[in-house]
Amino acid sequence: MSDDSGGYPGAPPGWYADPAGGPGQRWWDGYSWTEATALPAVPPPPPASHPASVSSPGLPPPPPAYGAPAPPAYGVSQPPAYGASPPPAYGAPPPPAYGASQPWLPVARNARDLVAVELQISRLARFAIAFPALVTLVDVITWVTFASQWRNFGHQFHVALIAAQNHQPAPSLTPPDSFGGLSTILGLFAIAAVVVECVWQFRAASAARAMGLPAKRSPGWGVGFWFIPVVNLWMPYQAIRDCLAHDDPKRAVVLRYWLLYVGMGISAALTIIGLMVSTPVGEVFALGAGLCALGVLATAPRVVQSIAVAHRAAVNP
Image (cartoon, rainbow, N blue to C red):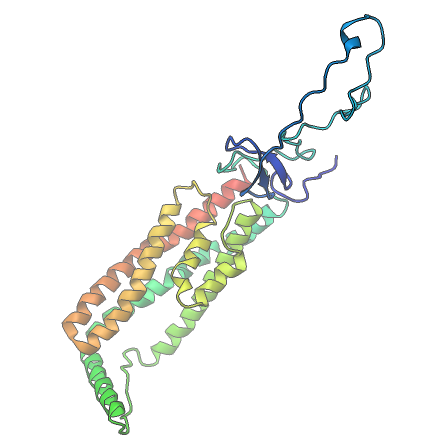
């Protein structure tokens, strides 16, 4: 038995009857329904009946009217009428209803392998995705503990700013170093955590694409957006969210994690600025950053776990 589906998870790309109930056809790209539609042409009027068709029983049927298509020979299948859905390739399931999830579709040949590769790193990724929150929590506690150093640094910055405005030599700035030599060690761990998280996200997105889940971004771009300013406030969230089906309730966990993550980063930056200006102001922002960090610590591992469970269930129904 041959497989003509071309490696697609469902029916091959083509025009199919609009599952949304429209009068025409909608384009199926092999993974999901698109917005492209085609309306059917108005059929020509039927040819006039031949007089002999109602008289002289037993005579051969009259020839078709001029311009009318000849009937197919006996035993030859007639092509489907315009607007009818062509049958899917042999062995391929029909496309799902427009906008419906596809848990019943068989996965691509390599989906199980991609999910297996993803699961190899999922356990480590649960810690890696939460590590920035752990570092932020330790940071804000340390910053508040050494608030006087940050207030002194704020004074140095103010003096340097006035000197620059008056075209005078600016004094050197000495930022606080609360961790001492531990800063280098924490930096190395942070880099390792970022690498693990990016590898996990790429593997999870690749597995989701192989299973036919629609995604706004490719796996590579989903990782690359982390390092592009401004767009990294939203695009990475879309890439992680699209690792789950659009009707998966665990998408709410991804959104909650992302809002806490962005809030944590903004609050941490405002904590430093606040401590340089006024210790009580910095402590207020530090409280917000700490609460957001605790929220990320609670939700980030659940994001990895939810995606791993969904992918394992999809390839092993």
